[in-house]
Image (cartoon, rainbow, N blue to C red; front, side):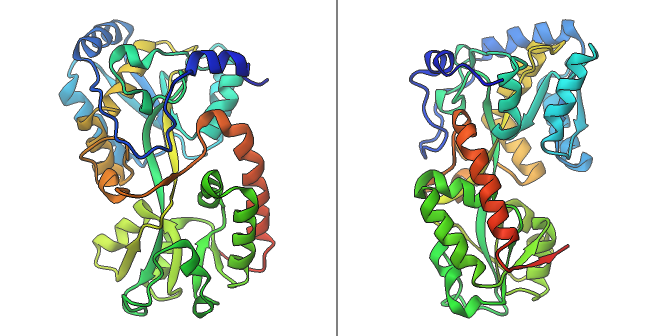
Length: 346
């Protein structure tokens, strides 16, 4: 099933695109939070499906408890990406309790929207800025930011790649690492178009890159000098950087990101609690708590490190309502990387 586009356009008319650089300005309404808090308490605990490790998310849960001491939040780690949608579908079909809020990519949420399994929420009624809510089904929570990394012991500041075309310099042939999945390149296509990105991938493949199954080992191998430069993700490079690894970070322009949105299932038992958590994560306090714990931040919220990181950069990403356009590109670009002659690394 697919979402009725006319209904979507009527509901979301005038909503700003997520890809704009302007920061969110409207504060979440305290009266709305108080109302949701009271209703959430009556409904019991809030169940949150999200992918972060327990040691990270416990810090977010603790910050939420300080702000809302009488509301219990239970985090359930879901690391399977697309598995979250399947889990919600199975729970709804089995008439068992599902989450009250999930946080994931639009590609995971949109199939649930098409099945009428996501609640329509008037986020603006609670004071959320329209730029954080590009659809009535999603509220922006955080984003992964794709960055260019280089080993500062192997590569001088002058030679370090700083933009997309710099990675195509012949000097990086056999010295370049990247993720085997093409999410960042798909986001880039929102600005560049499919054909230009396809040509870029062909030239990137000519560099004979090392293709990593995860960006965490990619950053570790860069730090160890196994590759000299890499196309990676900002937050997965931070752990080795904090340990003193010689990793230099450059943010290309446009900046490709993969946003994660929070959504409330239509079958949730504690819908008010789900909305409460989603809205709190969209406040400066909630956004900073999540970013400090996970390393991923909301670039729309002033004061976050991610907002500063992406300052003066154009943002490249497909908005949730363009998921049907984005998914075929992901399939095509993933195949191009996998079959392009690079060397796969665990």
